[in-house]
Every structure is written in C-alpha cells, then in structure tokens.
Image 1 (cartoon, each protein chain N blue to C red):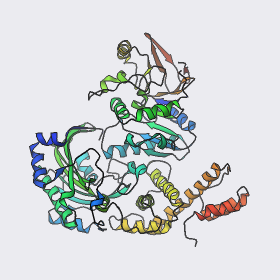
Image 2 (image 1 turned 90 degrees about the vertical axis):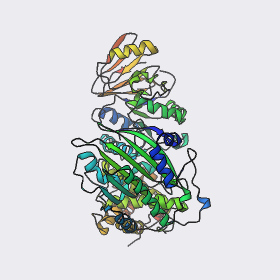
Image 3 (image 1 turned 60 degrees about the horizontal axis):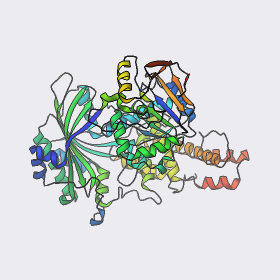
Image 4 (image 1 turned 135 degrees about the horizontal axis):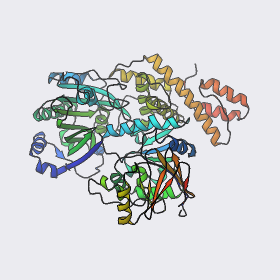
Length: 228
Length: 378
C-alpha cells in the first residue's frame, strides 16, 4: 500500500444482515460514537432521505451497545475540514455511484474527504460508497444514466477498482473493464466486505472476496488478507 | 422516492410549458433570481404572525369545499416512514396502498418530524413543524391552480405582501418502487425564504385501478413566520432558550407525547438523541426543562391530540433528562481522566450523592457540575 494511514470499511452492498460482521468491526474500531452519514448516492426528496435515516438508525445500532449519534448530511457544501473533526467516522451509503461521485467533486468535498481518509479518518462505504474508494467507477458504467463526467475514484486501494454486488456472473464485464482501463479489480459479494489498513485488506463477512489481476481470478476467503 | 431527477427547470421550462407559464403569470408571481439568494429581512417591518391553532386555516379551506382532516399521529403504521414527515402522507393509504378514494379535497394542519435538519437547526430550520397541506386526488390542473390561488389569498389576508413572493419551477421525474411518474413543481418563497411548495402529479400509476392525479400545496407554518421577520417563534419567551433548545424541546415533547419512549434504535433512538442534544445545549443555558416541556406540550396540543397526557409525557422526558445529564457528567469526568462506572439510570440528585461518595471527584467539581442541572429542586 502507499504511505497512507488508512482505515476503510468497504461493504459489498447487501442488507444489514449481510454486512453484520463488517458493521461490528467498524463500530468496534471507532473511539467515540459520532458518525456522519452521507446518503446522497440516493436521489430523492425529503421523504427519501428521512427513509435513509430511518434505515441507518434502525440497523447500525444492532451491531453495538454504544448509543450512536448519527448526523445525516445531504448537502456536502456544508461539510468542512473543521466540521469533520467532531465525528469519529464517516458513513457513505449506497445508490447511484456516478451521482455520488459527481456530488463529491462538484461540492469540493473531494479534497476534504481525501485528506480525511489519508490521515486515518475512519470511513465506511456501502456499495456506491465503497466503489468510489477504488481507482475508477467505470466498473459500474451502467449506472451512468445522465452523462455524468466524473469517473476517477478516490484511488485509496493501491490502484484497484472495486465492484460490489458481485455474484460470479460479472467476470466478462470485469475483464472488459480491466483491458479498457488497465485497472485491476476487487470484487465483493453482498455478504462480504473489506477492512483496509496500510497493511492490506482483510476480508470480513460470510463469503470470499475476489481479486482480478492480469487475467487471474484469486479467491480470498473470509478473514484472509489481500496484501496489496 | 427512490429516484428523482429534474428534467427541466426555470425559464427554460416556462418557455416550453405554456400551461405553467400562464398560471405563474396569472398569479402575478415572479421567478426567483440567483441560485442561492439570501433572505431579505432588512426591508421588512413585520414581526411575524401568531397563529397558534389550525382554526384559521381550517375555516378558510372549509369555505372552499375542502374537507378538514384531523392530523394523523407522528407515529402511524400506515405511512411509509418511521415518522410522519409530510402532510401529504395522510393520503398514503390511497396513493400507495390502493385504499378507496373518499374525500377528494382535504386540508390538514399536520405536525411532522424531519431529522435530516438536525445538524443545521437554526431560525427557520426545525426538526418538527406544522405542515399546512391542501391536497386533492383526481382533481384537474385548474383545481390545482385554484388551490394555489386560494393559498396566496390567505397569505395576503395574513399580511404577506405579494410583491415579495417569488417562485422556482421544475418538471421532475420520480420513481417509487415500480411506479414511475412526473410532477410539476413550484417552490414558493417569501423574502427569498422557501416557505411552501405546490406539486401536481398528473398520472400516478395505481396497482388495480387507473392512474390518479395528485395536487399538493403545502406550507410550513414556522417557515412562514420566519420569512416575515427572521424569527421562528415569538411565543417561547424563555430566558436563555436558544432556537436549538426550543427545537429540541419541541421535538422531544412531540415524540414523548406520542408515546415514543427513549431507546437506542429506530423510533426510540430519536427520543434519546433529541434528549441528549437538549441536555448538552441546556447545560450552559439553564432553561427549566419542566417549563419548556410543559410549554411545548401546550403548544402541540393546539394542533394535535397527543396519546400521552401531560404528566406522563413530562415524567418520561425528565427521567430521560436525568439519565442523559448523568451520562454527560461521566463523559465530562472521563475527558478529565476520571473514569468512573456508575448507573446513569437514576435521578440526578441520587447520582450526584453517589458520585460524591466515591471520593474520586473533588466535591467542588461535583457542585459545579450540579449547578448546570437546570431542574427545579423539589
């Protein structure tokens, strides 16, 4: 890994039952109880976002005895480097990966988020929130339904791109992406996730993760570590 | 909404949509300029209005043939969110679950909770408020237009000046489950403060019957008040009560009065969260929790019948206040490297005595913390 002090939790994008083990590890790793929740990969109105908050406050507390204090942010322009200091972790939920990345770039949050992550800030990404951590989000090109222009992810996992909701049927798509973008890929089924630190990415969940590297597909069972 | 996309907006939309353009012209409204225009309070002299019951609005809409509906509880199993977050949700059973269309035009003054505004609570941005909603099913666009007109007339009667009203318009595409639909949206601003919205869905697909049309014209009572003079409340005249304290107290009282006990997840999570916020905000303000909770209960009661009576509601709120005050005390001590394990679920008076007995904390420090406990000593 690069010289970064990473602490990333990347979920394959399943339900709260699927990500239970990753959620537990995530919550154990935070030193306090304040989480900034960013659901903007979902596009919707006020009722949609209230539903997002309903979901996170009904699911995440199941994985801890702590009382979590979860603030929801739907306008990234309101997040500053300073305001992030009061949180113990950032949680970015799923939805449309392209929309999420565009909002992150256009709001200027990209530099704040990169600095936060590189300085060891704890980050949890579910589905779209995990995919943007990789090198390039064109691995989910089918989500680009509005000619979004941003595709370069935060590139925090040593040049790998990340695919969520992997179920074994997407190998051809992954191969095409690798040859077109010259990127390697980590594929995460819904029932698994990764905890990435500067030492590597440990597979946390109920199923294996897969690494696609120069036409090779390598299986990493749960609890094994992908050394990058 | 699982998907939301603006297809067209602003002048471009008006150029292509003659029906909307004519409506806006006929209403004498102007399009809002600039992306983020600031509120314009300096020009105004109004102090805000003090309508503290739904009677005025109920009467006005009744005269126009609307059925006045009783608000639903903020906890209602028939709505699709944990809490009622909008007045239009009173029609959720018809819109989403195929219930029979009985009253076509309704007006409701609906108390709602929106936790998404919690980190940004300030004058005009609250976590609970009254959503004044005129809605109709299967009414024509002309009727929708009439409802907007009616609303504007009511506003003028209340003292709003038409020249200070501006609008933003958009045509949006939405998806809810398998249902895709489009709506024509007018955001209504006063002194550049968003106070309401008018939405018309021409065809909302239904499972076992033809599509229905939905008209919704809704205003936030407290936003309306804020838009006049920059102050949200004129009736919480309590020394030291900032808008954050008032907001926490109001939302907490609505939650507890609706039977939502404090806890660590789901609905109950909100009660605990708001109580913690209230305790923290109030530590340096010293507002009497009993007084502000009673005042809040009294204010809500004018709009909605709460399932729990005043005594029971206050009992829940004060028990939780003590718990969270005790927890904050332990957190404060931990920050000062005094780590003590104690039961926080007990009255603060007893908790403080026990804390004193541990001998781990300077008595003067305990006294100083206890001074921040704003409850009246009985």
